[in-house]
Image (cartoon, rainbow, N blue to C red; front, side, top):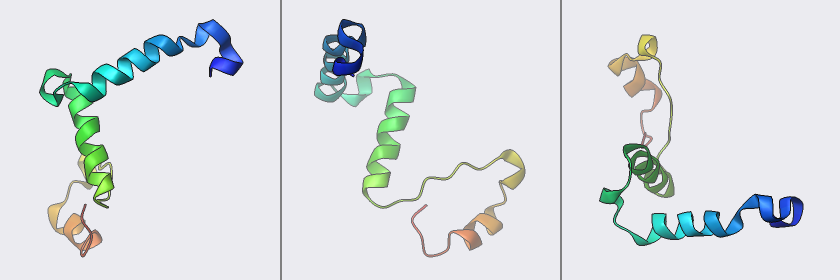
Length: 71
């Protein structure tokens, strides 16, 4: 990014944001950050991440679809 955009890439600010996100307690972050963090940890543990629409929210069908998987 820095090579392509130069100063406009704002690498210093991006690095500062990354440092703050990684060095502080997760509890001090926004709900969206905590959700993304939880999803990241679950993916690292080989869980599947799927988006399900309201019309697809059928517990028996979902259990059958993901049987044997951590999802």
